[in-house]
Image (cartoon, rainbow, N blue to C red; front, side):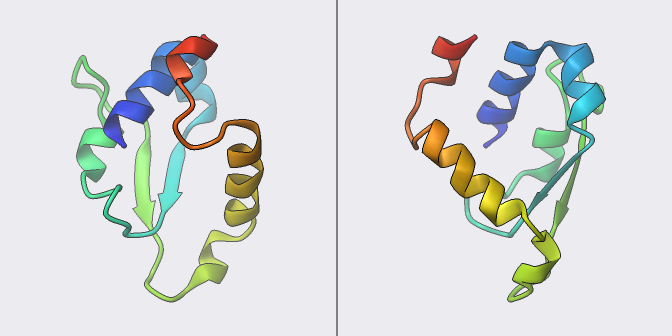
Length: 85
């Protein structure tokens, strides 16, 4: 997941990424184990914050699940994000 956040930052640029991606809210899935790595840019500075929802509390993520479904519709799993930017 850290690689995905790195790619998103490189596509958006550091300034835009930090302006719009203040928080990453997720569950404790196996793809999200390294919060500190996702929060930190390659230059060692903090670029965002990662927060985890409590187990079995899907309501804490609000509309995030619906946005994820919409995103997967536009960018199916396995889409090459580097090809976009």
